[in-house]
Image 1 (cartoon, rainbow, N blue to C red):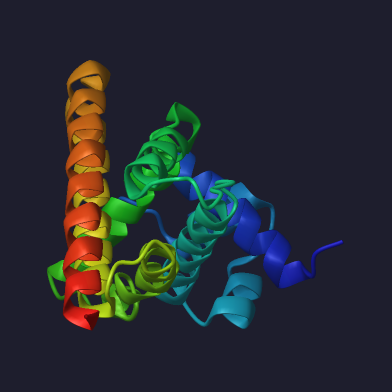
Image 2 (cartoon, rainbow, N blue to C red; image 1 turned 180 degrees about the vertical axis):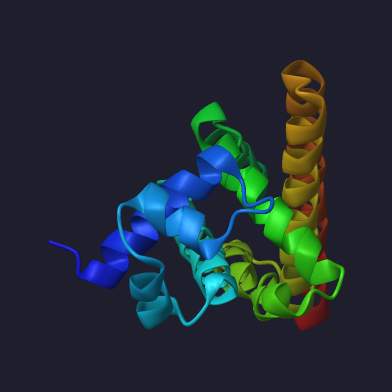
Length: 197
């Protein structure tokens, strides 16, 4: 059974994903979660501290999902993009994606409470993708650049899907990116083999 802090965090993730953060006070959030604002302060320090923990937990869940995509040695980088897209664009995850972009936007605007979210928001995604690419012969520098490109494009596609709701068009764009990603990886692997000769 999760500890009280984890239970509160899980409940906050679900509530905030469903309702957003807008002008929600800590007292209102505590009431919605069936606890007191003092309990939230005890566990998270402030409303802002809770929001950052919510996003970090959601991101951790998404990275765990990436690790569980079931990709074998024969899977191409494009296959990984396709599976990630199917997983992360699942309509059931849309509330969590909205919450991520809401707080991420606040961090990018320099709102102090959200700034800690920027620590590792890209870098934490790079290592699994770099390892995947290196296992397929892509040199380190290209694997890192491709991983960063993958994070940026996937987030952009998710934002597009949330903003437009145009599943058909965004799915088509994701497929084009998967094809292009295979081409990039193949070219980098060939270049890497040539450089080692």
